[in-house]
Length: 258
Image 1 (spheres, rainbow, N blue to C red):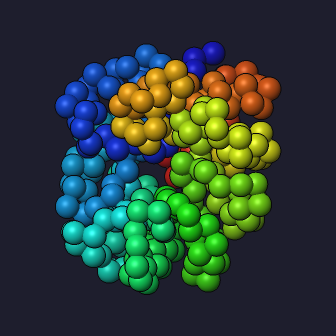
Image 2: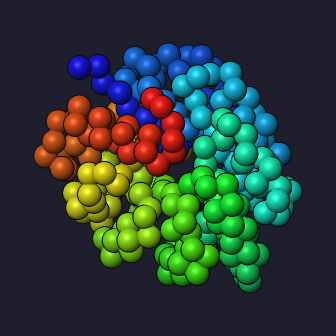
């Protein structure tokens, strides 16, 4: 059986990946990666993300503004809906809350997250959610804004099992990055063992967070295979099972045929 993996979260328009997209895609295919979701973090560079999706059948795109982005356009719901209606755009985000990198009054961050949730609900497309040191407020906003209507994924999951169970109850998925391979990531590894088979994804967040054995290097989409292999070991399953399951989960969540 041919292995089919999906890198459900990568930043293909970032250096060094953008310097050799054809090479990165070839390496990914060699590793069994059949599809990639290129994630936008601001609207200024969103056209680059969309162009990658329009130019490569194995790439889909998202649109959104990362919670740490402060310098560019602040989109309203109508703007997000207009951009998110493109057929190659399969998700709204990366959005969410990050209290680690931002300081002071963060009402602006919460308001931005609310607008992204509203746009996702209007479009019927899933959210790609970033949360860092903001678990309680992330959950509160997902509930208050009825994000269960659109669903989505908590990407680069770093929280504990009670948080995972709460977002699963809202219809969300959780996605494991290279962090799950780190020796210190016992909490994340515990979640990877417990999460239902039909509710998790794998990702790289490339060019960040390279998995063991490449930790410290610029990450590559091909290395999502290392993430899947590690999760397979945690769950006591063959790599092929994890690949098949996470690819099916990706297709179900994002409505993408892989």
